[in-house]
Length: 211
Image 1 (cartoon, one colour):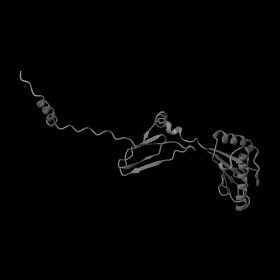
Image 2 (cartoon, helix red, strand yellow; image 1 turned 90 degrees about the vertical axis):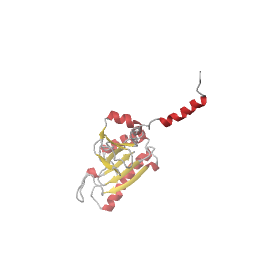
Image 3 (spheres, one colour; image 1 turned 45 degrees about the vertical axis):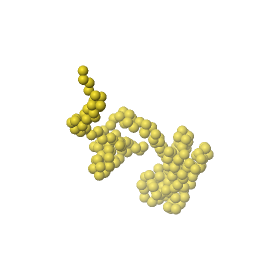
Image 4 (cartoon, one colour; image 1 turned 180 degrees about the vertical axis):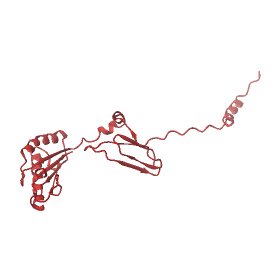
């Protein structure tokens, strides 16, 4: 029986690829999402809006818990897609857990023309001090304000004394000086808009923000 030489078999195997039909073009893979952005409510309960624009087009997020996908610089951002709270937690849970806790804000009111806290605000000091301790805060902002009685200059000085009096209380409870920012707006940032020389208790205040 005649055998086919081994060399011939090898030659046939080498030629086979050349005899095949041209390969069918594969469908391109689905584009990979490079960035996904979700619009959430902020610490103050506001949603706001954000616009994304590139060479391919633009889209705008205006509703809470909506998402757009940004694939590439020359591909328009995707149309807004609503997400459930569960889906947001699944997709972005690890990122959300890394966010700092929302800031806490306290308003302490003062007696007319003095750095003496009202009785109600004295009672709130315990809550403020506890918040600073619980947060182990290293960023406390204290801003003093006044009503419109007195001159602009004297009110600025009074607002600063009020802010400093609250800062001194926090320092006395162990908060380091370098963690506190003290400033005064005087009568320049009224909570309740009034005419000049009006006694308004709600404007006589110190605003404390604990981050």
